[in-house]
Length: 185
Image 1: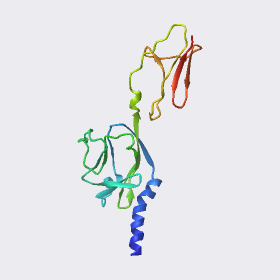
Image 2 (image 1 turned 120 degrees about the vertical axis):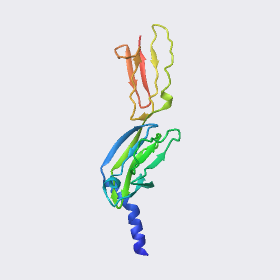
Image 3 (image 1 turned 45 degrees about the vertical axis):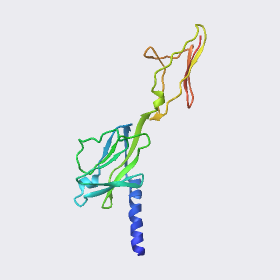
Image 4 (image 1 turned 180 degrees about the vertical axis):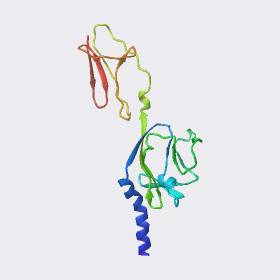
């Protein structure tokens, strides 16, 4: 009985320890997109016909050499029907928090570890610019809250569809949460 428990513990720990030693492939995926990950042991080893898939050390399901594992994060996004049924992990309709480290395990062999990172821009930033009125001869500060997103968004000011150039009458100042510009008279 003790031997059985030790083997069971070893089986549960192996994927995590192997995954931490594997080379990690970085994948950037836009929000609402779909990504397919392949399992190299399932594709390359004859005796591997069923693979377990993991996300951050937790088992999420299995695929076989003739069927994919599909995870739908957003039910509005259709599952791509152009993927071959060869044991892929299909991540469909990715959202902000759906990334992580994914890998497969088949007969003790761990496949490529993929770190999926979701590219997004905070919705509250995507609205149109507001009109601002001032009197000629007065200084003005135009305020802009830096948007949340990944990768970290950069902010630039434009005037008539051209990048605003700062000079002695214009100063840009940035803080961790703001990207303001001050126009001096």
